Every structure is written in C-alpha cells, then in structure tokens.
Length: 424
Ligand code: EPZ
Image 1: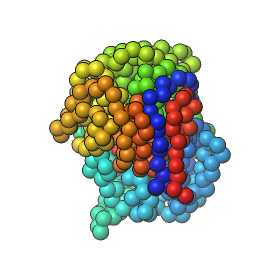
Image 2 (image 1 turned 90 degrees about the vertical axis):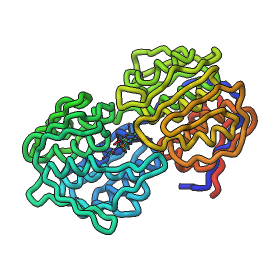
Image 3 (image 1 turned 135 degrees about the vertical axis):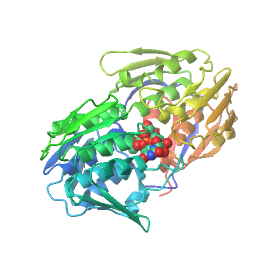
Image 4 (image 1 turned 45 degrees about the horizontal axis):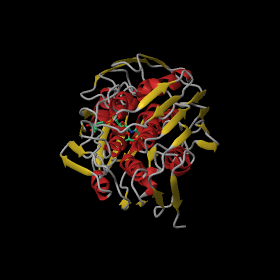
C-alpha cells in the first residue's frame, strides 16, 4: 500500500455516465470471519478489492486457513485452524478485525487479541461485544493491552439485550451463537443490510438464524457448519458517495449492481435538495442533478434504516455548495467531523460545535492541498474537489482505498479529471 500516493483532481467537470457499484466492505468483513466457523471450503463472490479485505485475508491465513482471490471471488478453506490469536500488527492495521473474535471463539473456544484501539472518528469501545460474550459463557481477562477470551465450558445460548444497536456487537454475537449450545436471542439488534447478509450466509452454511434485519434475532445453535457459496451484497455507502459526487457536479449518473431499497435513509435527502432519482427494477438507480441544489432540513445520523453515519461526510461535502444552511447532527460517533477543516480549505463555510455541523452554502469552491485522515472523510474531500475550481491535491489516499475500489478509475469513467500519483 502506497502511503504517499496522492489524488490530483481538476474540478468543474460534470459527471455523466454509469458506474457499477462494488461489493460491500462492511458485509464482506464479517462474512470472511464467518468462514472460520466452517470445517471446509467457502466461496464468496462480489468481494471488493480493498486493503481492508486484504487485511482480513491475512488474518485468515494467520489462523491457518487457505485464502485465495480470483477476481471478485475469495475462496477460504478453514479445514485446519492452527492459531487462535489475532496478531497485534493486524489488529492495529484494522480495528474492525475484532469481528473475528466471535468466530474464533465459536470454532476453537479461545481467542487472544490486542485491545482494538480507537481511531480518527472515535474511541470505538467494544464493551457491548464483551459483555454479550460473557453472558454466553466466555471468560475474558485483559492484561498488558491484550484480551484473552476463553470458554471453559463452551459457548451457550443467552438472552442478550444491547443497550445500543451496535453493528459489530450484533455480528460478533451471531458468529459466536451459531455453534453455541442452545438458543440465543439478541434484543435491540442492529438492523443493517450487512447483518441480514451475514445471517443469510451463515444459514447457507447450515446455521439456524431467524429475524435478521429486525430488532430481535433468534439463533438456534447447531453442531457444525459446512461450506457454501455466497454473493456479498452491494455497498450502499459507496453508492451514496458516488451519488453525492454526481450531484455536486450537477451531473447525471446511473449506478448499476446496487440495491436502491437499502438507500432509503439518504435518497430522500437528495430529493429534498433538488436531485431527481429514478429506481429501475434490476439493481439500477438513475440520478439527475441539473438544478441548483438547496440545503436539506436537519440531517441526523441514525442506526439503519435511518440516515447512515457513513454517508454523513460525503453529504456534508455536497452541502457546501447547496443554497441555504444545512445542519448535520452526528449521533453515532463522537468525532466524525474531522474532514470539515479540510473542506474549509476549499472555501467552504462550515462551523462545527461538538456533534453538530452547520454549513452555509457558497457559490464556489476553489482547489487546494488537502489531507485525508480517515476513510469516509477522505471520500468527502474527493466529492468536494470534483466541484472546486482549479486543482486539488489530496494526500492520505491509503485511507480512502480502505473502502473505495479504485475510486479514481470509477470517477474518471464518468468524466472526472482525476488521477492518482503514486510515490513508488
Ligand atoms: C460498523 O462499525 C461499520 N464498520 C462502520 O463503518 C459504521 O459506521 C458503523 O458500523 C455504524 O453503522 C464495519 O462494519 C467494519 P457500532 P461498528 O458498533 O460495528 C458505540 C466505515 O466507514 N459502541 O454500530 O464499530 C460506538 O462507540 C465504518 O465503513 C459502544 O459504545 O459500529 C459507536 O459510537 C466506520 N460499545 C456506536 O456504538 C460497543 O461495544 C456505533 O458503533 C460497540 C459500539
């Protein structure tokens, strides 16, 4: 991964054309973790080519799995698991690796991992994951920054109520419960499409999960799982990001290989701003943004099916040139406006007060040197740069590439003047 790579964008070009949306990073990661539970081979299609997916494959290999990619298909053979520790360097590389905790525990009965730190957008605690696993019989000790999770009498089903509908905690409970003794119920479960996709995949392996996508999920433990094939759902966050990119250039876009029914949390906001959208039946959505855009009413990020926190940053970029005052309230993460100061360097007029961001639309943005410091904030800088007059240079491309498969090729294919300068 080239940490010195930069994106060079000459803004002002109207995007027009068609982009095929990649598979969902946030679905592929827990699904790759689920492969650990299978004494055999699993095949996953539509896995996006991203550094975070590569990191997950490195963890699988470290555990003793055979992991290979052919195009968008990743095949994992977990017949022999020889390790139950997630090494510190891989945990530090991707804190989302904590999603392997539930599957390693479910397969081997023990898991050691270094405590996942926080990141740019917040402290990212895992207390809900750990308290749920303890309810299922895990004994967890923490020393020298390491978590040692053991299950002396195996994992057993439990009735778990989450104080917050955490996506990761819901996924780890699902992964630990499918081979546990007895029935597990998750109350106040996350309802994201990625949860449904994970449950669908686990049920193909032979699990007995019902209610995924609702607030209460029921898992009846089984004795073993067998490999299967599964196709990962499209990435709704990447789809939303590209819609913002087209909208800020007053462009016209068709997205294919996506699922518009998963985007009802943010498409109405685009419509309210003056963007026209049309949903076809076959995984296609059309967007036309010829009009002057106006500020939406207050946007609050919420768990699914509300407005997703992961598209907040790209939408704040879009609102920098929308007429009027836009207000965003970030209710999920405590520090998710770090990209705003970079948008101001382009000439945006934005004020941040804690979890509230107020944007006064400006007539134009002008190019500048910017630095991405996290995934979605970095994507927001790309969105804004597409509308900025002149040249914008964005460093920290490695952050953006954690979640967007060759973003420069996707945007160039619909008319953006964008190129990636690698340092190597
Ligand atoms: C997942 O993170 C996604 N990551 C995030 O996407 C996404 O923003 C988030 O869900 C919310 O939708 C992956 O799927 C890999 P949470 P996760 O547990 O599981 C608090 C991206 O850009 N919390 O729902 O970590 C937590 O601090 C990434 O692709 C606890 O307090 O999200 C946060 O404030 C960023 N204790 C809130 O809940 C816990 O034990 C949401 O966290 C767990 C979470």
